Image (cartoon, rainbow, N blue to C red):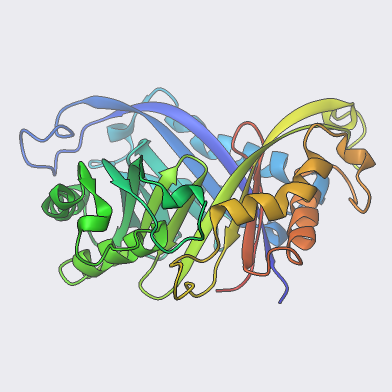
Length: 347
């Protein structure tokens, strides 16, 4: 299968608002402010510019869309400028076919979606728990008793933040400060099995639930949407580069440096014994030869790499990884400011 190609732009703005439709006494009812974050994702074919300049072009488009909001009073634009209304407003200003926007009003809440569809709500929670994986080979580090500050992100349609909070608060005491292995259904508490366990307990009462994401660490996690699992592992790449096909006079044409955040996404049925898509440690070890070809290297000297722009590097990584990681379903390559490129196989 041929992957779809996307460009990603990320930006921030500060703005004040009041949400009068919330009940009196709710934190958002009175005048308050947020440091909003927006991530816009559009098909590369709809960002009408050469690949070498595509990321910059989308970044500028998002910045232009956000410009009227910076240090503004959002109620001057709408009576009730909640996150869903604001995401819709930004997408209409960006004016790109089938573009998607992830808008966060705080690090733990936001909305995501695209025009002509209801936006999904996102809420993130944290709990502390210990676990071990009883079925791993002898000597595997996850077979030892250890623990994490787990994070869980719920994504749901037609559910406000208070509704998500209520469902999570009913479930959280079973997980908080526990040994997960002692909980019925979590004898082998991998991230994937934990995500499915949470889904099974929330979905009957939360019909709009779209997905449950479990993060063990800042660089790895698993998502379950009721039928399929996706995991990811992230890496930092510190590279030197010069973009050969950059426009004349562009700073990108000069030798410079970049720190990339690379996310490898993988999807497959769970291993019946081990309970995971792929061991995070195996992803790291299998990717290492490619990692060493990129990290602390000059990208324009990497064999087979068409050019050193972010879109070209992401495509090279996707093609190079598929032989070593057959479960690979997507690659995200983000520059230091969160903008970048992605490749994704059809679901």
